[in-house]
Image 1 (cartoon, rainbow, N blue to C red):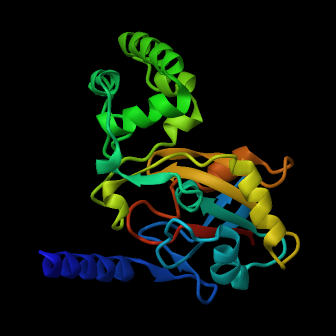
Image 2: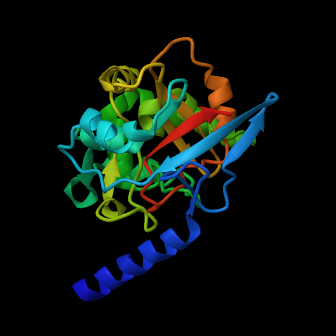
Length: 258
């Protein structure tokens, strides 16, 4: 079984490498069928992906970024970092079999719609994490409002009430690189503080940092290093999720104005 698992992972990595391509900037990649650059409001922006080793609990995020991202940075760049690796380095990830869901989590998870891009809170273990992160009262209120929204044909009301700490919980997924295909990863704590800390650790001046939570149907900027950053512009630039989703192993990237 272990041999089969290793062979499967090797095959997956070969597939990933075959559909990632070199960008016009040496050492930086473009994922899948994504465009390297997009034109937004008359300006052209490159979206450049950085291949890194697997991030694990205990990794120093600032040192990680300095080693793998900083050599490619230029003044004026925006460094984008996925919320998942921020949470993992904060110790906010755990194997799903270590979570013991209660009765309320089992009941509420039945009413959550499963989607193609992730299980979300549609399993008792992730719902249990949401109850712990957000509190029972908030989740119950969110569930009630979400139910009303469904009756009215409106989607997303649950997460608007539950908040980003619930929306950012990632459950296990077959397309995620091991071992995180069997883990639950929570939303990071103090994402903007993490962004500022990363920026301040860099030797390259004039770089800002955004912590992002995107999938193939959209996403949010959940942390930023400068209050003057145009978050709506960033969302437009990242709308098609250029860092990819799954086991492509590009958890950091660069937005560069051309």
